[in-house]
Length: 198
Image 1 (cartoon, rainbow, N blue to C red):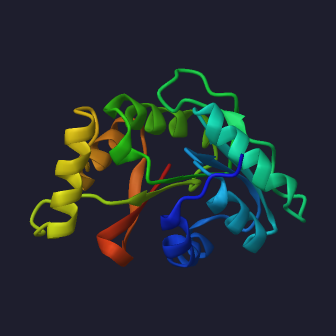
Image 2: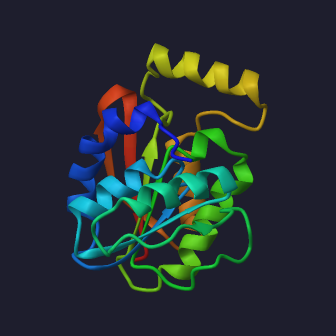
């Protein structure tokens, strides 16, 4: 039942450091595309004042998250929800923050559009963050060779996948009344982008 994503062990400390600075002190955090559930367990365990709500559109991922949750000793990790970011309606009406790691480049563009639209719907409090982590290209900044190769490999696997640009994220955010408040360089040529409702 439990799935393992090797990258979670490599990036979780760096992501947690950013989350400590960007997330509210308490409230509900909705994790979109939680995958194996390893991030959810790790972050919930180290941010005990936050209620962590993992979600994913894949039933196998939901089963993996649930299996990790069975062994979780705390009470702030909620049961996983089946949620497709591209859907017009989500099974969550309100959240104090949204976290989405490594989804944007391995999903159709409609999922990212839906992510920003959903964030605009459920992040009702001014300043509530949408936190994105993953590889992105940026205008005026030379792309790392590893990211160029990764992008080519993604597009070979699925023409709807690929590394997106920071500028495209900013444009989607603006359309939904959100604005970027932070850009943080991360290990392995990744970025964390934070968007908030003014």
